[in-house]
Length: 283
Image 1 (cartoon, rainbow, N blue to C red):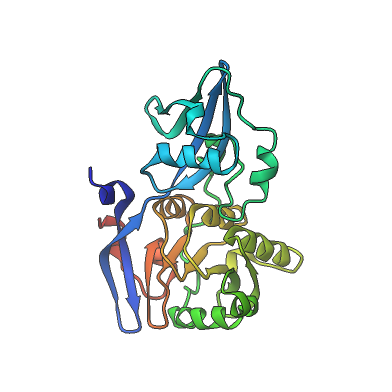
Image 2 (cartoon, rainbow, N blue to C red):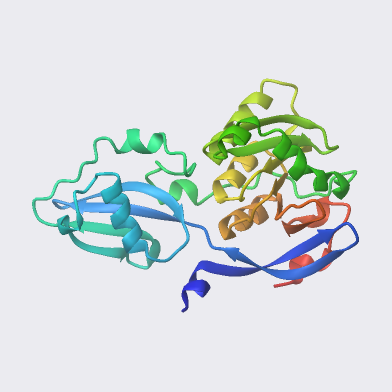
C-alpha cells in the first residue's frame, strides 16, 4: 500500500456554491487514535493516546517518549511493535534494567495544547460515543446564504490572532446567523470548551446552534459538539476521516472548506436548504 493510500480515504461530499449543489468525491486525511504502551520489568503500562495519521507509528512512539523525556535515547528500547492485530496500539519494550520516567506524565499531558485527547491513557476512552443529536430535518432548514459570510465574520473577530498569528478561533452562531460568542486559544479544543462554558451560563439552545472553526475539523471537536448536542459544525479547513465518521454516527451536519462562495457537506446535508438527496448512496 502506498503512503498516500494509507493516510487518506475517499468520501462523498456535497459541494455547494451560490448557484447549485453537486455531489462529488473528496479525499479525507485519516485520523485515528494511537495508544502508546511501555513494557518494563515485566509490567505493561499505557502512557498516552494521541490522534495521528497512520504511518511511521514506531517512529512516532519513539520520538514521543524521547521528546517528553520519558526515555533518554533509543538505546534504551529493545523492540517497538504493534499490539497483535490492533494497529492502533503500539508497545515499546524496554531493555533490562531501564526504568522509564513516568511520574510526570499526567502533569505534562494535561496541559497539552495540540490535541484534546492527549493525556487519556486508554484507547477505549475515545472509541465510543452514543448518538445524542437528532438527525431529523430542521424546520425551517438552515439557510446557506449566511454560511458564506462566516469566514469573514470569524476572521474579523480574531483580535489576538491579528497580533500573534498563532491562535485558533471557535465561534457559536444561532441558525439564523447571529453570533452568540467567540473565543481564541492556542488549542482548538480549548477554544471549544471556552465557547461551551460561556454559553451554558446563558439561556442557550444547543439544538439551534452551529460551531464555526477557524481551522480543520478533527475528531475531538466533533466529540465535544456531540456531547452538548450541537447539530452543525462548519470549518474553514478540512475534516479528518474520524471526524466525518463520528459526525455521521451521532447525526451532526459537518461542513468543511467553507469559503465566501462555496463549501463541502460531508454528513447529514438534509438540514440545509440546498443539498443533494442521493449523497448517502455515493462513494
